[in-house]
Length: 367
Image 1 (tube, rainbow, N blue to C red):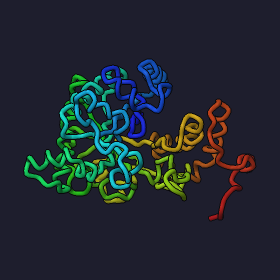
Image 2 (image 1 turned 60 degrees about the horizontal axis):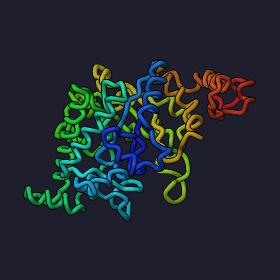
Image 3 (image 1 turned 180 degrees about the vertical axis):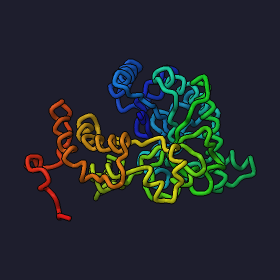
Image 4 (image 1 turned 90 degrees about the horizontal axis):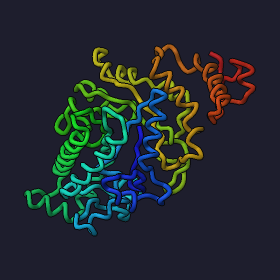
């Protein structure tokens, strides 16, 4: 799963819309050209891995989209780099696509065509998280479009505007793929309690859950026949537990998620703990650890991912019974970390080497 663009930067080179990376990449050197992407896709394919692209929209979009006005296409994105950022997005810089500009949809159609030319995938991730309704409601062009329809910009009306955007964007994805295929969205305001069926179809959308493992929407989505993917941030966000990058203290999802927490996080158990129906567990497609890149780059990504991702692998592939805790896996995990290092993977250390040489003696309290 490659979240390849965001508000900060647009590093994806689009053959049909080259203006996006021209104006939106950090530098000409920090662009993924078609050759780069094909190499990554092929490298993964040879190892049994499918690379799933995500183009997050309508939020998490900004830099790179400013070219519209100069080319007579109007504002493709609004609130770009707007201040104070706290009023218009969840982290700086801000930006969202302009849902009332028809040129947005023609541009998306071209962009989606580029994605399907480069990625061999039978599904597509459309993002959809953290849309700031105040951004749209404070944009004059959008306010005017709502007034023409006799609307005032209530939350319900803005959610309907978002739904209209999602419907039109989805049609562009289908056209680019040449067929209907499963679409993935993050949990968001459209999927909140009691209203998901008003906005999304369970026959078209898979929902990726990034809220906590106790979120009541988990049971609701599954009980309403939505297929789901788990990435609950309280266990499977690997970027948590570092210093804040806006202000001081720790980042928003601290503390750090150790391999033990990763291992114990069972999607099926979370659903069962909410009174879920075992017959519906087949709707749980699996899970994914997220390593968001605000505070990681190529210099650190390997040891931030490994060996914790190995704990995720055992949880998803074998899904040990609740009686099998991380304690039964600990010695295997330590040995596996050493094996990774021997194979040239710079996996982070978990314990002093003494613990590996003296199995079972590194504990806090005996039962």
